[in-house]
Structures are given as C-alpha cells and as structure tokens.
Length: 135
Image (cartoon, rainbow, N blue to C red; front, side, top):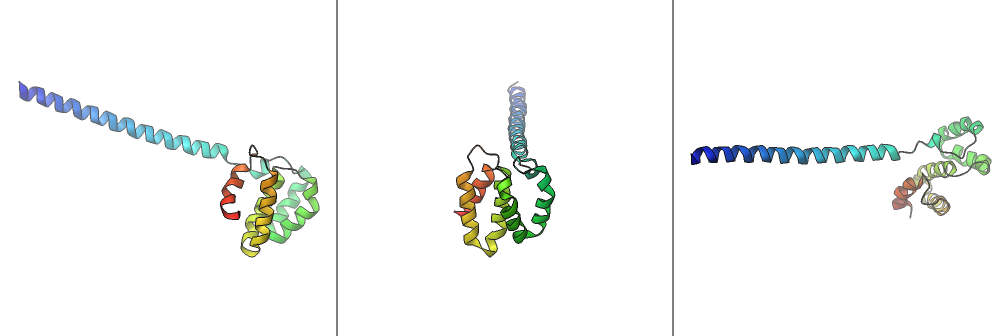
C-alpha cells in the first residue's frame, strides 16, 4: 500500500511540476508578445507625422535621396514652412547623416532639436535614443 501511495504521490508531483513549468513558460511568452506589440505600437512612421505640407513631400523625398547637401538645402528653403514634429524628425535624419563628416555640427543641430521638442512629442523616444550619442 505504501508503494502505491508513494507512486501516486510521485505522479501527482510530476504533473504539478509540469503544470508549473508550463505556466511559467506561458507567462514568459506572453510578456514577449506584449513587448513586441508595444514596440510596434510605438513605432513612428515619419511620413504620417504632421508638419510638412503635402505639396512638399515630393521635394523632401528628392532631398533625402541627395543626402546631406539635399537635406540642408531643403531645410534652408522649406524649413520655415514646416512644423514639428515632422521638421524635428527631418532634422534628426540630418543629424545622423552629419555624424561622420561633421560631428560638431551634428551635436549643435541635435541640441537645437532637443531643446525645442517636448517630452510628449511622438518623436521624443528617438531624441532620447540619440541623446546617448550626441550629448
């Protein structure tokens, strides 16, 4: 009888252990799914940010294709017609491009954008990420 009770107890403990292990694995996988969902929900699509008039979108694409000189000229000509947060995003693109060739200019432009953009802005996470490099 004690062998039978011991066997039943071992089987019960094994089933309980497997249940706990499965429960733990389920919690971990749900946390990963939540993290991926939050990252995707927080992803900013620059083209959807307000601030650039629709008639300037084509010229902006052309300027982005021309790199640093194109973006500089575009911001010089059309920058006053644009507003944040999109203008800030475009300037941050220029900061990233400038970082190799003109790091001092990149830090100066980054500081300008950072001082202008509030924490509640949709581009603030990008500023926070880039701050590690440009401060």
